[in-house]
Length: 156
Image 1 (tube, rainbow, N blue to C red):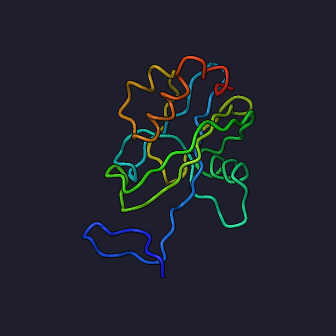
Image 2 (tube, rainbow, N blue to C red):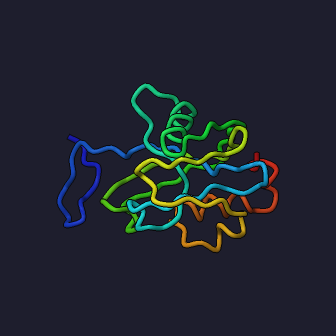
Image 3 (cartoon, rainbow, N blue to C red):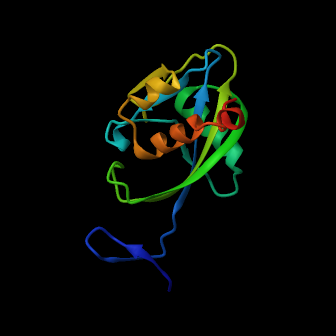
């Protein structure tokens, strides 16, 4: 039986696989991005998203997760980067994620309604977002989008 890692106390964990997730930096018509604060990320700010279900495509999962968590419809979806998030101390439990990160634009005038996963939301410019207390994967995503030359490729 293949080993997939070691637990926090050094115990061997068998038959575990990384969890593949999707998340998006959602832009509104003013060029601001939607930031959400969640307890599961130590009350740091991040982006909406979640797990891909078995048999579900990543874009379908992204649309579903955004709708579930924010009630927003999205368009102009662009892949930005994949990140490994292995046993982050910022996350509320020991986990190994492969994060598929996107940018997109919300459809129409945004009427954000959060589900129980997030406690707060805020629309912010990219510069304002970078000044917020962000979880590390979100900071990496925003910094990638802000890199010279990437704005045209990743900003919807």
